[in-house]
Length: 288
Image (cartoon, rainbow, N blue to C red):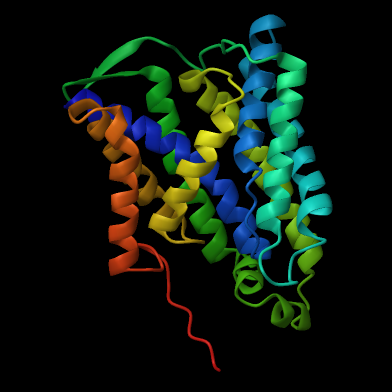
């Protein structure tokens, strides 16, 4: 059981590292960027090409993956988010899915459909923790997820940029009237989310390897984590990710993989019935 729980924590950490990009963009622009998981997938392929095939050191691979992710994030903001944001109906849900599809197609064209290996970040050796077994890189992944959420929570609550992002996510027009440059903030957020996503691909790839189909799975499960934890909440994202990952691992081990999806959506339904805004989300009162 301990091993299953540790496996679940690693799975949850993967979803968290994807979903932090969702939260950053949502806070800064009020938009949902469904291309984030594809950026993580792209980071994994960059790690395979430059880390395994060309022998670039891990720090160099992380920097390159982050740079490529940032460029993709900026392009996504300009081409898929800015033209539709603020016009109602959340058109970015469609346009960013289109970006994700394009990125997946480009990956298939460039790298093919075969699974590619990725070098360990620290070590692929397995260690014993609290009676369970987990890889060293798995522990690194868990630590990265926790530190990311804590750091970004601090940013969103105690810095001017973070507080400005909260204002934009609440009311874009009012934030503009208060002197906040919403376009600059939005493009900065998508660049940061893209950089985090690209670098996260190096971490995630140590567990999943580089495979084009991983983007679709990460998109669905990471968004599920975000809804359960509460949109815009980094503590909620952390708790939601670890709970979802643990439930997935325990369900797969004791009931079978065919019950995993059922268990996850039963959890989602239970949370939405009890607290529709998510575990750590906040209700928004509007005057009508």
